[in-house]
Amino acid sequence: MFKFDNGIGLQRVGKLRIRDRRISTPSMFLGQSIKSPVSPWTDGVPADGVLLNAYEILSSNKFRNIAEERGIKEIAKHKNVILDSGGFLYLKKSAKQKSKDAFDIFNGKQGELRKKIFKIQEKSNAIINVPLDCPPVYSDPYEERKMELTLKNTRFWFRYGNGIEKMPVIHASLSENNFKTVMKKFKRYKTDYIGLGGLVPVLMGRTTENDRISTIDKLVDLRLKFWSKFLHVFGVGGTNTIRLMFLLGVDSVDSIGWRIRAAHRILLVDGIGERHVIKKERGWSIKFISNKEWRLLRDCECPVCSSHNLSRLKKLYISSFEHRCIHNAWIQQKEVEIARDLISSGEYEEYIKNRLNTGIWRKITNYAFKKLKEESKCKNF
Image 1 (cartoon, rainbow, N blue to C red):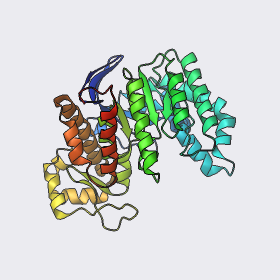
Image 2: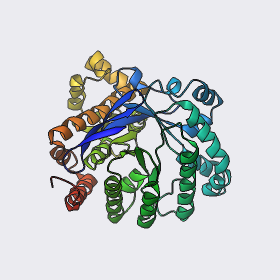
Image 3: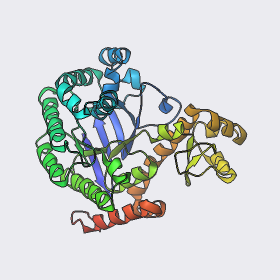
Image 4: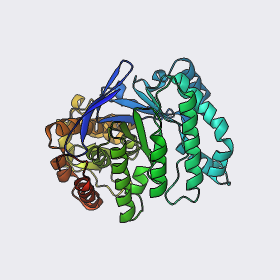
């Protein structure tokens, strides 16, 4: 059961109730990999939940047996788990290993894969399960066929998955007409949840301004047409994207941004943004952390910063991937708590304007506010 209270525009706070679980929204599920299972929520980070990948679990006999015999909680070390199907990961892996087109491989094996993914989800006791999808890339020549495969698998999940909670997923990379087609078909399913995938590559990738505008339009349209549903956006990545999602009425997101940035020796500095902790790191156009910014960490309440002096912190954050993960996950989770408080008090819009006011983010948020004001169903505008 999902209940929420309206804020300004599309903003909302609520409670998701599944079995004996109570999750405040907006919420964030921290993305986890079984290959490198760093778990900040076991080190004092108050995570709302964890997102795991069923295909990744399927690829390991050890973790597959654990999931099917003892449940997903044993792997995640958290009771609130969304179990994604892993369709994107399968396509990505197939593209690397085969010279043949990844979609053809998926199309040929998807029946077998569908049954295996379904079996894991059926036995794992995750709170929400995502039907096997076949995500199209931007301007995908196979878009129509991938869409049909996703719809076919979704029908399978809703026909046979009576004992599990299901979240059908629609992809932002679909054309406008196909996006509307999928929304119409999803209306027939009895579910409290709806998922949106593939948003960030279009919103933040090498796409045009019109593409980004179209993506925001799709998100707002999805939000309004499924107003009573728990809306989750997959793979949001960075903190600014999280902020934008909550402004546009998204109830939940997942992110591995905390892990990816930690792997590249990047810290999230509260009130500042992303900073490299060593000067040699390349490939990201991010500033090196200054002495003044190092000192700001003394006020951070994360389990790492609150337990060590500044000299020790520098050594830990330069050398330890795990400690960077804990800190970054804490900062991202804190952003979720800020959103809840400011949406409730009616101050989130002003917060967004102050935080997302440079570069590409200024253009994106300016259009987002314009879009919200144009929607007659957005109250208080």
